[in-house]
Length: 515
Image (cartoon, rainbow, N blue to C red; front, side, top):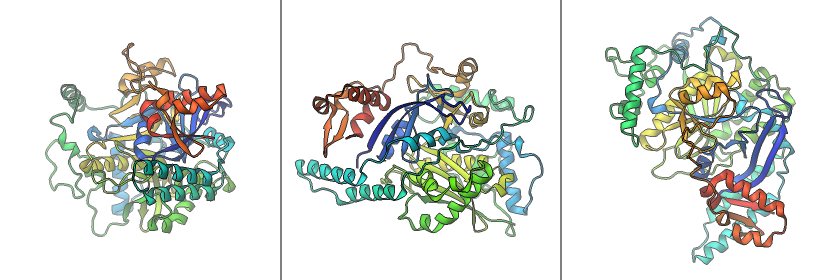
């Protein structure tokens, strides 16, 4: 099934949840009726991001708080001192029920709803997303059938049914979007948190290792650097009996350290597909929703009527991504999932993630505030990094962990830079640049082009807009044909803007719905 999107254009001058500016936010967006995982992977590699079914891209050189896509490289990831502290704290709690005393402000910032902030909620609420979905899905099915007949194939029944089902769910949800500011947790007090513009403190030995690794990577840019394959080996659930002398424990050793038989608590992490047809998702839905309400009210001070079932479903259970299970993909398949953390038979946290061809993309995390002492934001990020490494064993190209947006100008958001090594996406040429190279420029200016080559351009730019695919009046046609039927000059500007932002490849694969 092809991706079907409805471009909503540029939205400027709306509330920013990062700096609290009333009119500073500028972004372009589209409503994704359905989307393939490959299209979404290609879009996030061009600076797009989803909030429910709304997919948006900040206008980086105009918005008040530029949002740079950040990804971590899990195959080379080494937990920092503070990460190890969090993992040891969890093991102590599980083994002996020990609750470590101390101030949690010393922990790195917990991931919160920063990626789907208030301005976006308010914006989606104002958008006219009520196109006739039944008609749209019917028209699509019809046009696909006729395309297939032309090619002499019989139409696939499953494909059109899947599309209609996803649309039915969308219809049932209504359009209740919260349009209120999301309260952010306080930034660490001065003197308490580390200076996040500087790399985490590391021993000289680790720095030497990193230099050696970078040198090896330069010698062997295509694959894994020689001598570092060990980090990509299957994570053993049972750590080796003896730790080799001087060798630091791996992330997996720290997470899966064996517990005594009489351990005080049992933690189980379950991966559940986001689908109302999945029995596990359905049976845990009400518990998951109750946890979300408790989290929103305690952490974001949301009134109960603003964190209802509609909002929860819309933003965290409704995804445009079509589930795919190719033989060479991960065993769980690609698509949107909830990673549920069950402690002694009850859910204490849920990480919302997308599993895509090249990465695990973190969407959101909500947790039980009663367990804040376990630093669940940091813990879940480390589990997701380990999970990416695990998926990489079977699907070698799946080797990155995307953490959403990094906002250097917002102190609350700089914690994402602590998961090293990581890269930021250049907003002009869409190449990845190691974060260490980007930070000096970001200290001087909110908006930066990270690619140092002045000649470099966006290689994936829209070269031939006439080949862009349009879905119009029950027919799929190239833009070259569609534009001959159009008299509105504004229409051409909108379509060309869309083409420039999604790039040539996506513009030829995705169907741009026009009515």
